[in-house]
Length: 175
Image 1 (spheres, one colour):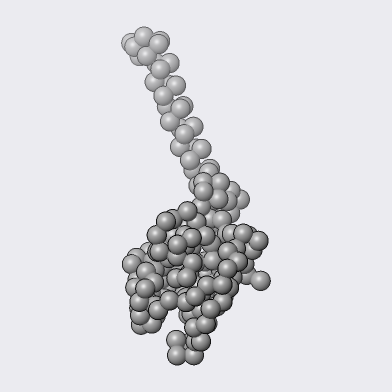
Image 2 (cartoon, rainbow, N blue to C red; image 1 turned 60 degrees about the vertical axis):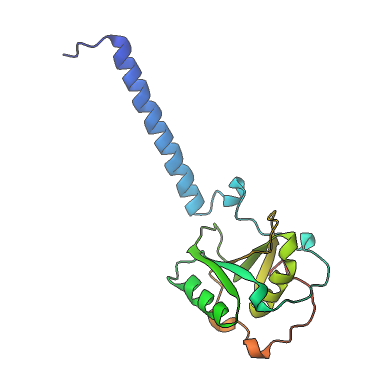
């Protein structure tokens, strides 16, 4: 027989119920994000710029040594980010970080995420990865993030010697 006052038992029961409710909500939201039902953009990430929001000015390419890149793998392919980072390093890009990332929809080749100040760097990288899209965010430096999706293939990267680095427009959609 429990000799505690009823109020203590009620408090403990409420604490347990509250804890289980919070754990259930977190688990449910996590599952909805994993299976793609709840887009990650709800939390401010995972969105792709619409084509009409793409910067329209002609971009001048820069030399790869002036492009600092972080490479993120959103796929289930182990080592993809390291393989791409090694290829970009061979092309004289400065690789800052290599890691995995979460993106609800990985049905794209690559997303180049950059701020307004790094548009030239993004254009230069996009010439090496032709199926990539540019997404402009709020950063105020020249850094570039390359997010690899399930449609990415290393063999699709343009050969560095075959590139004509001429001014051009950014591509912000898969079209």
